[in-house]
Length: 355
Picture 1 (cartoon, rainbow, N blue to C red):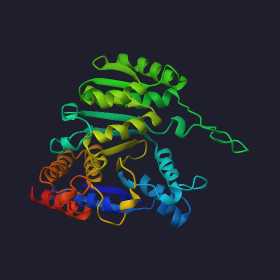
Picture 2: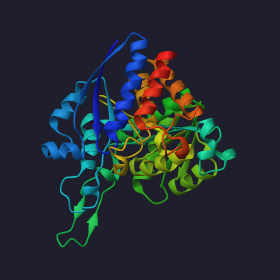
Picture 3: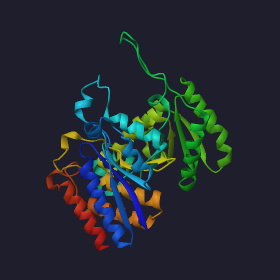
Picture 4: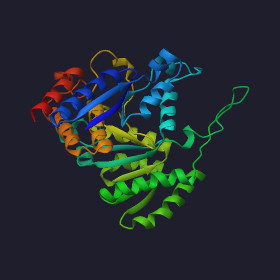
């Protein structure tokens, strides 16, 4: 099989971690008789510097023509520290989601036995935690209009908007995930306050009879934020809207002990994007110290989801687990005996080759 992959390294540590993911991909694809064709394109701050646009049309066309997109990270301090900037790297991410129709972000939250002690939570709480957070990506307050500030600059406003069609699409996807797992779906909203949340709840209730095997519960977002910390093992599939999902999935990520361990997939109408959940970590850019494992695991998720190469995906995951068990990790996991970003990437690729 020939895999056509758009590669968007992005900003900060993005180029470094994406390079390591490509090493793992090349190793497993060569071993199994496949071939990857990579087409690289700019996005984010680097794209602004080159073209003035954080998601140039040329980049969009490369993504549209690809079977899948491997993405690094977006963000640069020179824009973070300038609230009046007219063009921002994050606008590129939102534009990509909208133009590619990336309507659902899938974030698996799992723990690794060798890293349980790194979690800020007690080991008995997190050992065995395994759930999937499904976040709606193209609606809600990030995209709702009107949005802006008053003429005098003293009032700002954002509009939270959802349609039944947007909710139905991602709800059915969440039920499909639940059917393949432990058949439990937790819908997170704020229906006691927000009209959009009440529409979410009504829409899910209308679809639920089509999936009678799935147990459905509804939970307010503030309660969910507590439950993730108090009892993470109670969740199986979590479904929520855009902003709530943004916050809750970052909270859930610390359960594993490191932000550098969790992959994600953004499922799209045209193509899908696979990326680590962490940001661009500009303080580490160019230092060869960033953890590449989330990006490598995102590549595994891409093989499984976009190309149905489950065996190849599991080979990468096995190599990552071996690197953790044998202490072949970056400084965020073990400062006393840390490898560099590229050394971890090389080790995992060599492990795959030797399997």
